[in-house]
Length: 123
Length: 123
Image (cartoon, rainbow over all chains, first blue to last red; front, side, top):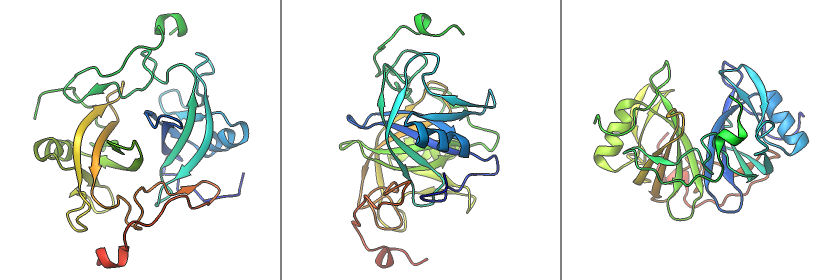
């Protein structure tokens, strides 16, 4: 896609993307997005990211079923960060929580498990 | 400070931090945080970041008055991203909007100006 705002990808060809629950406003996760991941997200309406550790395009929930329907993609003032407003199936976090931000910096657990990760992920 | 979760700063000594309005849930901005910025945030209760372009520690709102009182700092599952839950004075965005995410990727403006940036910033 070549329409819309020109995103300022960094020297690695990535920008951070924040996924936020479109209904509740809960911040679910942060991951990185390549131009191809953004195109795939806009084309399919399903959140795609780029895994820096696995070095590959990645559709959120393709293995787990915990997909993210993307209601809207927003861009920040510098066009170097994205905000995905999503409808999250199940939980966003691989630990079984709804949100990856389930701990305070002091170490207090403020998130509930919404699924059993052992039943969902092989690895 | 050495208490709490050990944050996994990247090779540049930074992690991204998402600032979210603690009351409304609005995602306000994303910026980067150094160990010193995190310590200063926790010590003072005011959001500090690290400016990659200016290469310096930075207290949000020190010039503009648009400070962020930090109610809570959260850490994600991989401990490589922070979430600041804040009480935002004025607007977070240097363009005068409440949130930096005031545009859709299609270019539609969905944010209102809450202050006049020309009256606040010299540069």
